Length: 342
Image 1: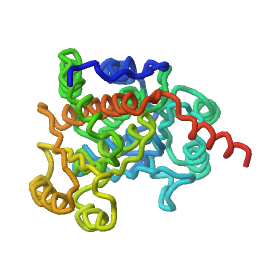
Image 2: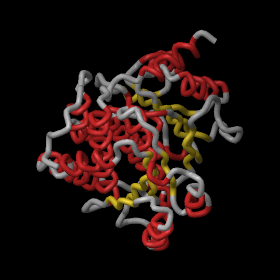
Image 3: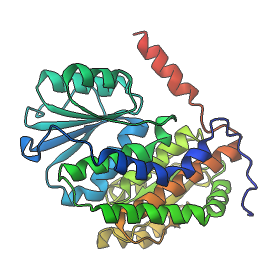
């Protein structure tokens, strides 16, 4: 397929924000690196990252990338309140782009009651008000977009914060090298035609996105983006867990409706990497096609960023295939409006 054949009604300029991803990551680091934090690394011994949807995915991405090398235990929390073990030796990092996510606000209020240290990442809203009232740090984002289109600001701010707190080993040089790889890929238009072609293939299909660390959270991001931008159903399945359940869950499914997207990381554990051939055989026997996706990258972070960009493009073009505008999320707006009445 020639690039540009899929026409997308893009009233919210979603594509413009997707192409802005490298600049978001650059600003996230430069805006936050010099900010002082009234928190010392020895003042806490465990961390909760609270957030949902397009904001919360940043915590999952961080843990997926650095999980085995984190200097302290980190839990990603997508609910009201906090885990029972969260005490005054716990740091809460609250991530909410709007600043009005009620579950995250409830986690912050619980943290204040239990005297946890808190750092917030947000563009404002009630979360900014709470930071002013309770005196905790706010890494403020100045960017107008839906939360899912501000991932560079959210994830970049979280990465920068965790480097400053010495939770992860990531140098400024390696951070910007990864961003430069993403920028070069976008400039050279490496992905659009491939994303368009795959979007056509996904027409009237239910994609099962399979991945292993450090791309498991990327698979979840694909599911979320396909849901919100393409208005279609998708399933994220993490390996090796999916080999113990999902692979047999298609026995009575409609195979012609299913398609597996297999995200291949060159940095994964060898046994997970080796599973591809076996999984391809299992789904092949069920007449479910498997499409492997891979990128060339210079680091695990660069690989993650490149996959994120490709998934964004895929969701955008699939919206065009289905004839929908990627920006409106009417069902979510309705749900939040009804919840506010309860």
